[in-house]
Image 1 (cartoon, one colour):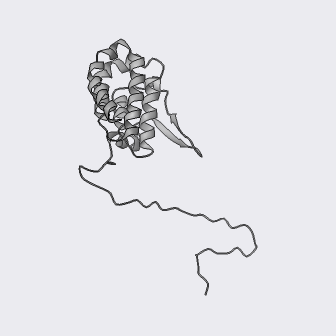
Image 2 (tube, helix red, strand yellow):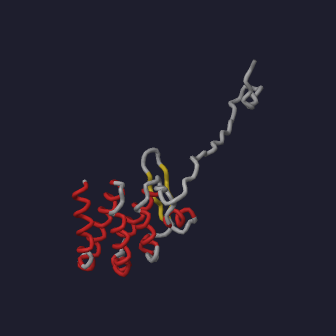
Length: 173
């Protein structure tokens, strides 16, 4: 009464080279307006290869490798897409959106590329501040700080738009 796993034993006692394929099973797909993990435009663009980064998985850390230098990339609409992805709670998209946003904002000569996009970026950040997920909001606050440090006087025009969101966040935390 032997249970057959379908593995043939090597008669000359050499080490068996077994190939194991893992089948990924996922839970049923949720649909509808209450689906918190629905795909964003960031997911779509990343999965289609339109965002020029590759995710490197280490034992513990994740790392991004850019196909081009961020300073050589056109930021419109890429930076907007990355900012929209900041609302993601699913791994690895939450990491990807956050890190690509930071890399683009801190790239050489990024200020001149970011300033024309400020109205759109501010609007996206204000929406993200309404998230019910604290980690999402904290990352958005960090991105807002980096954006403010980068664009300085130009960002000051939009500070009053953030005051209401920040006051609401402060009272909830």
